[in-house]
Length: 203
Image (cartoon, rainbow, N blue to C red; front, side):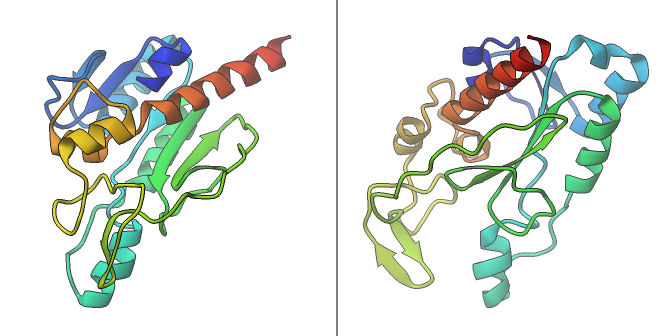
């Protein structure tokens, strides 16, 4: 949604059915679809790629709390495979991962979300001091605060309406889709930054 608001025509791909997705959509394996676009030359109709490979393997919860408690299991890590295809595509790209231990460059931090840029760069925005804690239980401590966590269910995690409001997302009320989504304000900022950088190159 953020890229749409920045002026892009958006085309998405996900392995799961996403009937609420508001733009052109291809259901299938994203890596297979990207490889197909590269092989057929259809990749040339795109201007910018944004990828969000599964993040569970390196996210803070997996490598922190879950690892310390012996919880959870193995998670697929597609960061390297995604990067290889994005590099082969010839497109400028963004690769997003939450803050954790994913093997990803941390070129830009938007309040805890990490992005990797390929073939372009932008300045880090100012990061104002946080107004308090994220509400809920963390490491056995319950805290109140002005922020909510958009993942999980218990322990003071956000309700669906709270996640919708916090993230600025109105097109879905499905918890799993909200927990996997990127706030449109983030991608709108990135989209504007990319278009500005592109104009400066061709000016």
